[in-house]
Image (cartoon, rainbow, N blue to C red):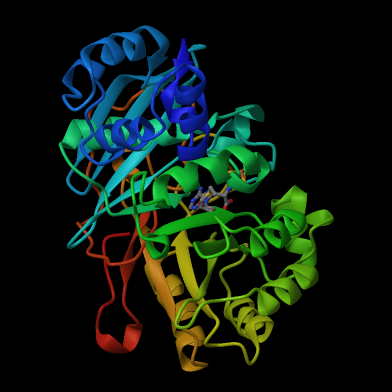
Length: 377
Ligand code: SAH
Ligand code: SF4
């Protein structure tokens, strides 16, 4: 059977006309699937009956089966199974006034960051376009409506699966597809320079948000915790990001996982400010306090240290937010996604509910001078 969610509009038009159907039927079908979340061809009432029958025999929409779903106060983790039996995770995050979906792009990851649970399995395989898109469709079907924001911050390195990511984003942001605003889609990367350069010229990807995981302020530390960065160096990365074309009022997010006694000192914060230099309006910083995992050798810094780091940056005019992971209690937070993890059923809510308005697998806290600091770590 063919998979409908592998097709963009042009490909589907070609496919249908070569089977003797009218060109315009493609838009009708995609509207049912991506605007109305109707996946049963029998219910597509503006299509002729014989066409519905043919479609049913030729195409399927879903590529994932829902294995489990774990609900916490401010997030829901979905565990999906691919047709070839792998498990992938998708996290729905409830923000103050909207929903954000944190989507996976690979099964495992080859980048090998030493603080990330996804890296523990190495790369198993890339997800297909349809498997990326279906994470959105399955969750939309489950909750009975649209999700406004999508962040590619789940399992895997999105830019190492460039073509499939690109087509999935095309389906998500096109008027004939899910029709999300490009401002509400964010790709997070560990910083593969050749692929960021490719994004700069790419019609589909150039206007979506870019988030880059910096995580260390010296080349030496960075390459020791993010092996990929031996060749994709910090200096070359910052040089490239300073030239990355941005639309007015848009910023690049620098993500920084704060790990106790490793990269959480005031000197680190000062070095980060120096790396940004005079380009303060071009970047914002998201500090992510490390999410622990029994298989990882690190700890989360105490709250006062997190806030101190944030303050150093604010004092230098750099917008800096602390993003407390939602989904920590369902093991769905950044760096905790791992395909073979058993689903945790008894929830232990150590963290208070956090409000936030940004994209990401975490929630957002404001600057320290606004009295918005959080407790509960
Ligand atoms: N591969 C991409 C996107 C997925 S990881 C990337 O690395 O950017 C999404 C974010 O989670 C990254 O910023 C990463 O640095 C962060 N992360 C990884 N492991 C983490 C952990 N254990 N605790 C907190 N954040 C983590
Ligand atoms: Fe891969 Fe991102 Fe995890 Fe690094 S942090 S191993 S790039 S998923």
